[in-house]
Amino acid sequence: MTFSEENYLKSIYHLTAALETEVSTNAIAEIMETKASSVTDMLKKLAEKDLVNYKKYQGVSLTENGKLAAKMIVRKHRLWEVFLVEKLNFSWDEVHDIAEQLEHIKSEQLINRLDDFLGNPTEDPHGDPIPDANGRIIKIEKHLLSELSDNQTGVCVGVKDTSSEFLKYLDKQGIALGSKIEFLSKESFDLSVKIKVNDIELSISNKIASNLFVKLV
Image (cartoon, rainbow, N blue to C red; front, side, top):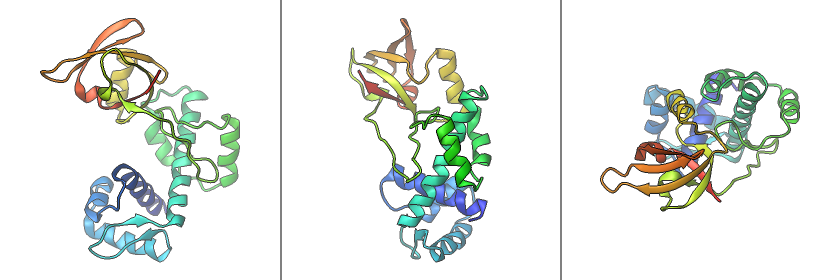
């Protein structure tokens, strides 16, 4: 596959996972920042390779071959992110764009050795699951921080927004994967949330709370 074909597969994979349904060409065009006509041309190519199910004016989904191919791209991306953070000391807000380039390396042997070298991690630096060599994913039960009730406590296990700006904000607040977060209260007026992290009380917006995943403890 070309780099472009791989990028399309990965985007369709993320869209279908988020929406839990078939996706439209317009949705793909938006995430790929291109014209719907260009998306249609690419979908025809991917359909010929038995990677997507596509019929004009109907939703798009991945075939079993397409799902596995997309998972392998995601696997490479997330393993490289772990490598960059753990071995090269990049911060979690720096690694996405670099991993976007590294994910297109074709060598399966390299990626499997990288996986073993890193100790076979199951999550990337942002808390997203890493598919294994067979495409299997270990899922954990998690909740958005905004969904918690007063006096519940959770451990931060992921972020919904992986933008550099959001991750840098979390760094400033001392919030990272593994941070213990106590949900103190929610303000009824603007839905802002009062939390305690590292024995420090913070007030965060509903938008921020809606982009943090926690596992209840």
